[in-house]
Image (cartoon, chains in turn cyan, purple):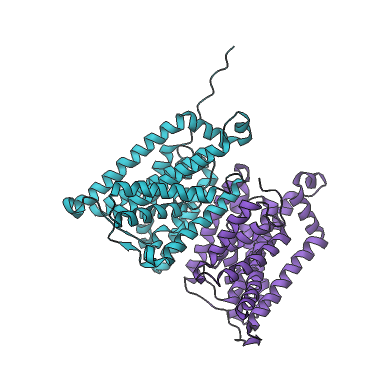
Length: 301
Length: 287
């Protein structure tokens, strides 16, 4: 039971990082990323391969973030100047392509069997139980750090300029903000965070396969961010933990409904996720913790 | 040489199948102004509706297609009116995201009822025709004929009926259309039935070609997007051209890369066209 709880805390933290990443791009700059699971996967594979080749874990995390940034720049290069809906289509495609490559390039990713035995830092010294506790602690600490940094970012000139772009990019451009550059920066930073989340997943779980980066994860994170409150880092963070509790809760709920097949249980849980997202969008579109918009300073007389 | 000819033939055949849901998707976009990911769900709903009348009542491909159109169209109308329309004021992106949730719900309703197994249509197995070194399946030819008939019917509807003309007017300039007394809500409802119905019909065509399961729609979603973006989002003739070009591109690419990368061709096509000609082959401005 304890290890199950620790596992949930770790996964919750990783989802929280993903939610913070999505909130930065979507809540901050209005850039939707439907391929979040793809960036998550790229980060995981990048560090698994890098540390597998003998590099230290810290460097692996850096490489994972860099890989996220490079992939982000590559796929948004053409689309950020277009209407937002094109970005939605392209990122969705990207998520699929990452999984396709991970499945088929066996020489690099070991295909559907996945990569196992990924370096688990300090596991030998800490033992299994100690490692699980350490992972949960380290991931949570990192989440808090990233949250604090993003809060600072939100209040900085950069964060305010991003919001200006989100609200009205023509006006922002008119006010002299470099709209395109801001969008690239926001998307790249968000991709780096998603990559970092992937790297943490790889090192805490020690095993990754293409199945771990299903598009469903992207929908979980969208649910987390909208339920928590789009545009508010704390909302995204709490939303992510709430989604993990919700997902684990439906696992038990399914056991209460008698006489249904396992595949029906899975279908019911996924349908509930979709339904919840719809309900939140309809009845609580600003989330549980709505974005705080500071009032404009009073004009001088 | 034969391999090349065979690839061209296969490309046209598979492209014509994608053309049907692609026209549906682009018609939805033209009127509602958001990319609907729920199209994947409508494709799967249509596929299962057609499969059901085919295996349960022994009806042929054409009645299955009609049934799929009705089931797809009605499910589209229900989702649009029940779950999506009210979100319109929050912006196109919000509705798009909601449409992903709608797709997830539809897909899992099908999974709950029918399970994850692959299911095939119950039709006599027809032999392949051989022409020189090129093989063509008779069933594939029938599918092509059905796809052509469906697309022709859509064009007839858009060109010659009152509703079709009103739809084109709304797509062209919604404000002007409203001034002329066209009720935008009614046109939106017709567009949803048409678009989602075509997606459903596409589901049957894809199912006749191979088999169906709850993921049938999601699996072709990227190809449908690619066809519509290639042709220019919102352009019905563009979606047909885009689907044929995509079908050919996929088959030709498969001469060089493994077959598992088929969907990657669609993604590459989207990136290329958005880089060099964002409005697509026949489309409007994309900025």
